[in-house]
Image (tube, rainbow, N blue to C red):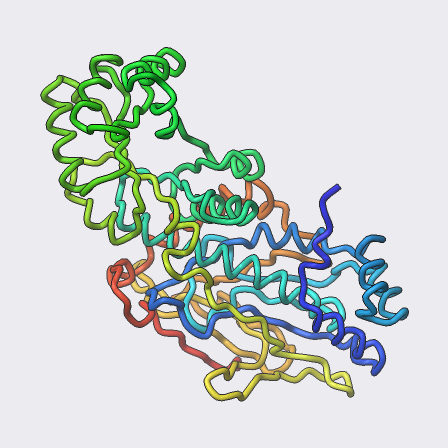
Length: 441
């Protein structure tokens, strides 16, 4: 049985529920929305990630005996609310951008519809998953753009908490990385795994040659040997002497990488190891990858920068009530008017306008009430962005597990092709697409 996610929430969500059950508003139908007011870090686009994880977390949002005992012992809520929570099941609907989709300020990434009591409890859970995963995926997508056709491996597990490390590997894979060093991400999400040896392996042995010979004996000549524990030039010569010219690859983890990579390539070619690949690691980010574009490098390993969002560890998404049922049963759009934190009320339908296959804007059509939302048929020059992810509390099976990860990865690859060239630049700038709001007619 999965572990309950019910206490992955902030206390004020339960105190609001407690009060709403007292005053009779808990059963009012509500629409909550996840969106970003801006793109963090001056990025030109964002990437949605974590949706599949969130759907599974909502499924596991159950208050068992342990959770209820904690709430009772700490007097978080009263007995009536405890009884409500004991039977809690989310039975509403979730619509949103498909995982792997790109987004812009104001994009309605996720819409949660249900009673206030059901939906308000999911705020922290939704934001904690989507903010981190989307930040990692956005950074990973920029790195993938900078790397071009060269494979990228995610190696950031030691720079994040143990569960964040698994989430980071998943998000990076969706956004264009080809593998991870994290075995749990491989087991849980089907992300391909990779890895051979660290410097400790070389240091364990009496000589570099002994270490290389043992690794080749165990893994074959197609393995990748780490050549910079001591002297790189001697490391290359030793690697080829031990494995022969069929040596699969060498890895460089230090030094001025563009210069060192060129020297290593020249030496490998001189030793007739012309098919031996060069992998570089060593604190890479999207800017370092771009600087290596002209170097004779075959693949990259990225650690700290991808697991931490490359300096932008959160996507800055928020969760806001945008429509609710009034006391008379009618529907009304609601929105904050706070300075610099204003939001757009109403249910929304989102589309991406296209010109000859290239995206030109984000179109958000707003409904004040609860009438039918705008449809794709009304916008023939655009692509509908939202999909039904959960209905009557049941998640779309295609968005879950390793199959959901593969679907998200494929979707991201397709939609990134729509972006205009200016979206792929790494410098800080305004969002690559403007967001246009229209009232439903």
